[in-house]
Length: 150
Image (cartoon, rainbow, N blue to C red; front, top):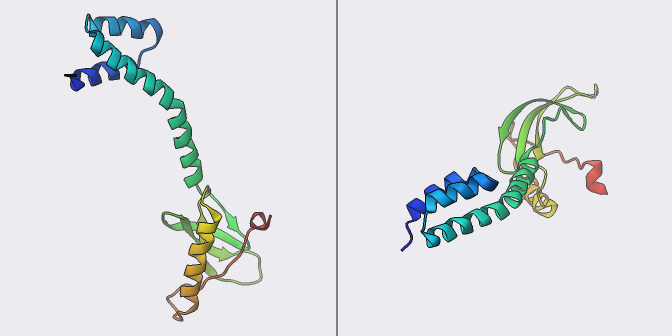
């Protein structure tokens, strides 16, 4: 039966080594236990194959989550972030085109979302907000970016 604690200990130490240093370490740590050596090398090989793919996936997810540090959205200057959720961030916005003086909440969706999912959620939110009238309930103003129309 495999000693998983020992396998993990050797794997973790060997994972930080490369080339001849790794080989010498495995020679010493595994001694004459060929089964232990095979198990650790199997894990090291799998780790080496997974690392580039996993690193790429993590980097892609991090870029997708970021909404950046925007300063404007349409005619609105974004003053500060007031909330963040699963779809993106909400900012306090002030009308910045000189036509009106008005504060609004601006929701920016994070990159990487499937546009059909986003559109569906905003349509449902829009329908709900359209049926509500109160000074403390947000009104929805819809603006598509030029990129959305391409």
